[in-house]
Amino acid sequence: MPKSGAGALNLTACVLAKIFKREIKTWDHSEIKALNPKLSVPAGQDIKVYHRVEGSSTTGGVTTYLHAACPSVWTATLVGSTITWPTDTYEAYGSGGMSSKLASTPYSIGYIDSGHGHADGLTEIALENKAGTYRTSLEAGAAGIAAAATEAIAASVMPTSPLADFSTVSLHNMGGADTWPIVAISYVYLRKNLTSLGDRACLLKAFLEYIISDEGQALLPAYDAVGVPNEVKSIANTALNSLVMPACTAWSFEGSSTMAGTGQSDHVISLKRRDYAEYDRGQLKARTVEYKENAKILALEATVAALQKQLAEELKKQESSQEKTKDEGKDNSDALGVAAIAMATPALAVSLAAMLVTLRIMNMASAARAGGGAGAQMIGSPQVAGTPVSAGVPPLDDDTAKGSAQEI
Image (cartoon, rainbow, N blue to C red):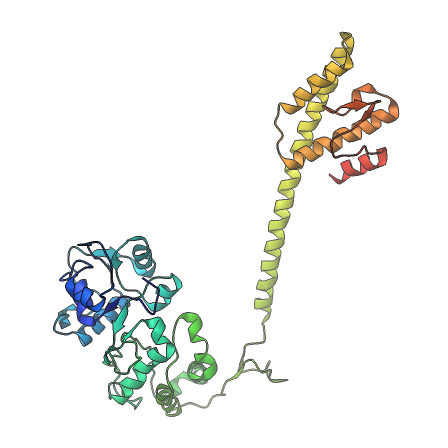
C-alpha cells in the first residue's frame, strides 16, 4: 500500500468499526473487497488489530469518531479513553509501541496520531468522510483538518460565544468534501475576571494573544499540529477582549523585526535577545565539545606512548640478537633476517604503529650511516652499499629523520 493517495486502502467508518470489533476478521472479506476491488491478499489472511492501553486520548478520539459515523455498529458503550476490546486483539503501549507493532507486523491495523504516523512512514487508510469522499490525513492536509472547525461552527456544533459551554464540542465526522473526519481541538479555559492575578494577568493575556497570533499559529506545524481557522480566531479574540484586567503593564513581543532601543526593555518578550544564563549554557556546551576532543587526543597520545614503548623493547631485543650473532661469528645478514622475524611477531597492524616503526628505524639507520655502525640497518629491507632503503620511501638524511621522530 502507498503511504497516501491513489492506491490507498479505502474503508468506511462502519467497515472499520467491524474490523476493530472483530466482526470482520480477514482482509479478503467481501465488504473490504467491495471497497477495494484491486486488493490482492492471501485467501483468509487474518487481520491483526492493535489498540492502545492504559487510557489513551487517541483511543478516545477514534472511538468517538466511530460512534459518530457509525452508531449502529459502534455503540456509545464503546466510547472512551479505555474500552473493553475483543480478546483476540493485541495491545500496544504508547504511540511508539503502536508504530513499532504496525511497522513490524504484516497485515496489521491500528490507530495513531497523525504526527507520529507520518514521521514513522506508516501507510495510511483512506477514510470515507461525511460527504462520501475518501481521504487520508495527508491528502486532506492542513486545510482539510481546519475545515472540521469551520464546518462545526456552520452546523452550530461549536458555539460562537466564548461564554458558551464547549465541553461537549466534537469535531469528529464533520461535513465538507475535503474534511478529515477525525479531528481534535485544544482549548484554554480561564476566568473572565483576572484582577486577582495582579501583574501576572498582563503576562497571561500576552501569552494567549501570542498563541492566537499569526506568528504563534505559524509555529504549530513544527509540533505536528494545525492552526485554527479565522472563525475560531475570532471567538478567541472576543474572549481576550472581554477579560476584566487589573492595572498592570501590558507586555509586547519582539519577533523577527528588531525593536530598536526598546527590545531590551522590561515587559518585552524577545525572540532575538539572550540573557546571560543562555549565553553561559552555550559556552558550556562549546567547552564540553572541546573537553571531549581533548580526551580523544590524550587517548591517542597514550596509544602512541604504548606503541613507542613496545617498539623500544623490540629494538632492544634486536640489538641483543645482533650482539649475540657477532659473538658467535655469524654473518650479519642472517642476524638481520632473524630481527625482521622478531619484529613481525607482535603483528603491529595499526597504521600508526607501522609509521612509527618505519620512522624510528629510519632514524636509527641514518645515525648508523653517519657513524658507520652495521647494526643500524633497515629491518627487513634490502641493503645497497650499506644504505637503507624501503619500497616507496626514499632514504632520509639525519635532520629529516630526527624531525620526523620528534613530530610523532
